[in-house]
Amino acid sequence: MTDAAVRRIRLQEWREVRDLRIRAVSDPAASIAFLTTREQESARDDAHWQARTAEAALGQNAAQFVAISGERWIGSVTVLVRDAGATDALGRGVAAPRAELVGVFVDPGHRGRGVLDALVEEASVWAETAGADGLTLDVHIDNARAQAAYRRLGFTATGLALDTEVGREIQMHRPSH
Figure (cartoon, rainbow, N blue to C red):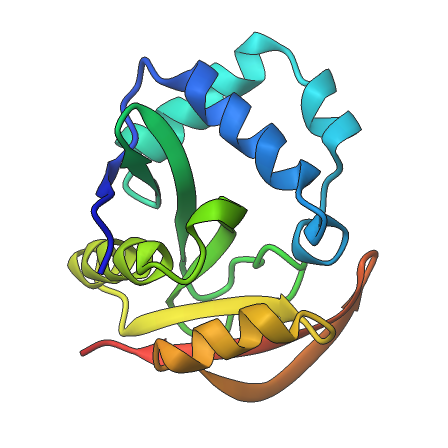
C-alpha cells in the first residue's frame, strides 16, 4: 500500500498539472503511453493549462486525481465521463455511457508501490458517483507492463482495438464494485 495522499486536483494547481504532464510525456515509455509529446505539451500556453485544470478540478464530466508523496506529485489519472453518442479519446463513437481513464502516469520511482491502485480506486469511486458502471481505458498493445498492472486491478480486454498514431491500442474494462 502507498503512503501517498490521493485527491482530486485543485483549481489553482495548473502549474503542477502542467509540470506533471510534461514529466509523464517525457517518460521512456511515453511514446506508447501517450498521444502527445513533450514538445507538444511544452508548447501549450498558460491559458490552456488553466482551462484544463479548471475542467478536471471542477467539472462534472471530467476529474483528475493526483498522488502526492510529501510535496512531490508522483502520479495522476484523469476520468472522462462520456455520454452515449459522444466520441471517446481515440475518436470512436460511444454506444453507452461510460467512464474512461486517460493520462495514467506513476513516477518510475514509485511504481509497484500501490500508487496506481490508489489512483484507480479514487477514479472508480468518482466515476460511480457520476453514474458510470465501471472504468474503460485504452492501452498500447506493446505496453505489457501497463496491461499487467491493469489486469491486476481487475481490468479485462474487451476485444476492441484501434490503430492510432502511436500504434495499436486495446480497450480494457473494469466493472464497478
